[in-house]
Image 1: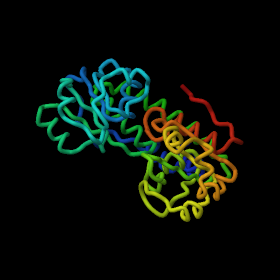
Image 2: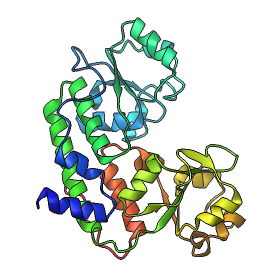
Image 3: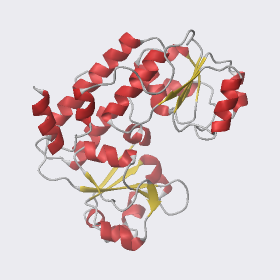
Length: 303
């Protein structure tokens, strides 16, 4: 299939961004440092980074991970250096790493500066929530670990999977409006606006983000939630638990008054799978697309 044909089909299914990397993948990583002399004692900060390390077959190099590194299950067996945005230098330095791979919004910046000053080799990994962003992550991490050949193999499988999904989703005739809610505590849940990983994965799965009035994650007033008129409600497993389960969520007045609430159209997914933008992103697209478009035949992984 030619690039021009693929471009047409993916644009119709919300895959416009995918064509950027199909047409011209970056030859060199934009972030990070080229290679590493000794990547045998690696600390990973970022769940998708840890997943990519395992996908590259380098899980045995890990000596510690952050609290978001929950997949694969064996990642949880490593010491935990804390949440990626609230790091401390001391527990990381105590592990005596030869390489620290950290997602680009890890921090605080003062801690990263302390680690650099202590001589820790630090590679910052980009975190663009898009198909081409996943490919760039793989490239940066593979180069840092001196595993470029393995990186090319992982990237090739990802591209093949994404193309197959794009071909299946070109038959989508209707893009349902999807409202993603994220609960981070006992307060009101936050809705995903533009320029979020939730908005990106919704589009890639053949949906339309219900919120276009703002960027990032913000609380919605009951009136705004009703006015958004989502066809489908999307939440993570954790959010569903924090909000008291499916019945409690759907019975909230502001949700019950929406098309999604009236028809009980609720999709629940693992948060890291859904929003991680790592090697399982095709799986996330596949799962979400199956929920949004049950009438379609979604292809299984080509791997």
